[in-house]
Image (cartoon, rainbow, N blue to C red; front, side, top):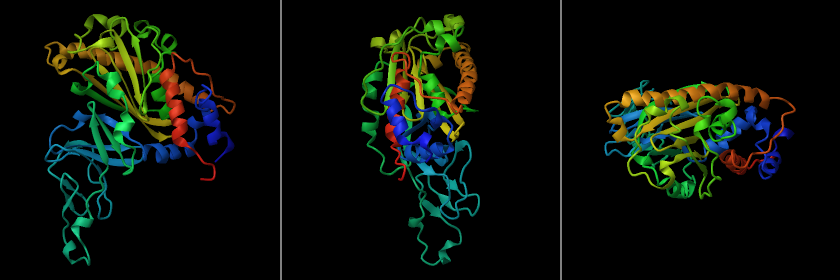
Length: 379
């Protein structure tokens, strides 16, 4: 491993309030190491539970070089299965849809919704063949707070330790009840970490979003003390953070049963490594980011509302204003990210000091990330 990417450099930087060294945003070697050390070992959030609702509903997930089928079995239990046949590894499914089982398009091996091999044509004459030895590989999966979490590591950390005191800090909002209204997927030519970082910091608002959302946000409170692998920060807002400054008159009513600070602002949370969201009094919007290579990432955006809002006769009109706000802010963030990615590639780029109040979540992630890499040069 080259000297500018050694593990000591990132520990030294992040433990002293500095950002992750720039070389960690442009190195192919580091991206491969992140996939192995983080994405294949930790819990990752793959979206909302309503991605698959009924028995037989499925969606294929191609994330960080992993191919997964997320589906519900006959008892509505959530399953995460490898999207590769146990015969000669043909891909089983594409996209999303409904099925009664999983049939391989190559040699017609057929699996139940729980991944059990049910039939394998002509295999009865194969010496020593036992169907029970050829079930699909399954992965750990958890449903919590309306989100789905997967780990491909059978020895992943205890999930309750992973989420820690997440519920205590987010219990003022009915997160689990919210419905996904739109899910978008796109590719951005920047490192996956950069995308998640820009969503989690207030510092750029007056400079990147001066006429769209900046005036809505007050200076945030200090980052919360957490137990678990996430960072979160609350800030008051003028109106709702779910709408542009020019569209506040289209605000939906508050979600039911809001309490505490939920009525007066927005909470920005980053569940490490790959999912971040903001929740305000009327909406939730979240992003997942996955590395494609060192300088590009796949991003998924999901917009969520309470069922009572969705049932309103004017919901389509009002929700369009919320979706417009998401798209407008993203259109302003992307040029900044492309520019930042170029700057990260400068040979003389150095770590910078975090602004403690305005970049609290990003600084927390940097410290977590340094611990997770735990690079050993000769390891």
